[in-house]
Length: 299
Image (cartoon, rainbow, N blue to C red):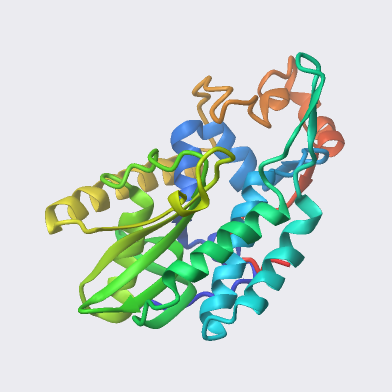
């Protein structure tokens, strides 16, 4: 039975109690490098002094604004206030180009976010589809006693049921829809929640200083066949079994993909230690403990 999870660290609590439960971010981390998965998701390590990701906080703030907009019957002012309050501490500062001796305007600003949201509200105000779920955390068994979890942005009722996923990105055409394990997870969870067929919708909010704001929005419907969903399920179980084996043996291979996201992996210092007895001291010096949980409340 699918049950909404309370967003208070439940995912990690369940794993600590012996439940094999993962989300797509955790599985993607393991696929990138099992050793990275060990440090981030088994030990909960995060660097003490890492700079916050401005694009990540921009996307989270847009999500909060859209959630407020939908839950207040499309009240623009409350939605804008939610965005401004959330993103202002992370606003990108302008920079200086030594080549041109000119100031370079920032992209991720409060003004930019409000401009894009204003266009979003204008374009989709007349969308009269009934919203039946917003920002809903779910978990469901996919087989062999193993569970997949995820937070579904929105489920609406049109001619049928549709789950929508918001994406904010500079790479507006770079989202691969099929295959897409995250979207397939949302389809699976939404159908378990509702007991009915559910298709998908990509709700893209682009980020660009050069494109007109009305070109930054698009909605793209999609769906998957039973055959495609079964391929997703089998692959998901395969990766979960590999994680479980690593947990049981406490053996975590290095993949040597030390720049997986176009920057150095946070755990290179731990993976390059000359002696094992130095690990505890390095962890104490360089890392805090904060377990990943997609269901935590955001401030």
